[in-house]
Image (cartoon, rainbow, N blue to C red):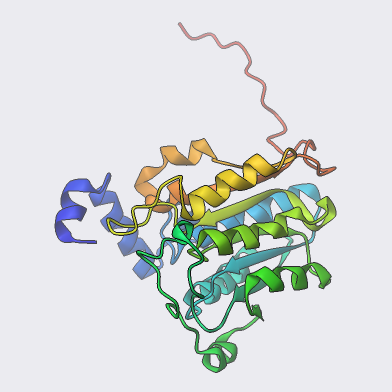
Length: 274
């Protein structure tokens, strides 16, 4: 971020500086730093934490977390690190999977893939180096148009958290096919991060192309599964712009969707205040 942007457009510059200091110095517990967004890739921490919390409340002891669009692998490694810490908070094991071509972006198919901004070969992976550095994640390499079905054949835990960073409309639509699996393979609510829903002054993301169009088209095509915005999170702008890139997949046909998981005591007794 440019200094001028930070000083004049950041909604909470002082809090951002303080949060960065807490993150760098690792002050406080992981749970404390999670609550204020003072972690590396707090968006990944949020979707994994929320997914594990829901799983624990439903009595589910294992879940899957997925990154679509691994590129160099920094995000997938961050997902591994967050999974390790979150497993110490909730009695839930987190399986991590990364989908990528391994060869960078394919050729854009049409205007919906934003060819004015993306080019073939962007984000190529050093597969051997990344494989050496991964601790738990399983890489699924190839075009997601074919490889999403490979996941359906695995004995994988129910999908609970997904980071979508495939850039294109076409690739995002292919990845969203994973949400067509039977309800038993999905958690009733899946916590999702969509990286390319805002873009830059050159990308100029809109509802007519890219990931936003993919989300809209998915919702129009599905009656019992919808990607919705968790509006309460939009009130937390001081935590970072990533709060605007979170969607929740609501699996209304899941047998667990209506199970009570909120606070047990939500009574509001009459008090004696004036």
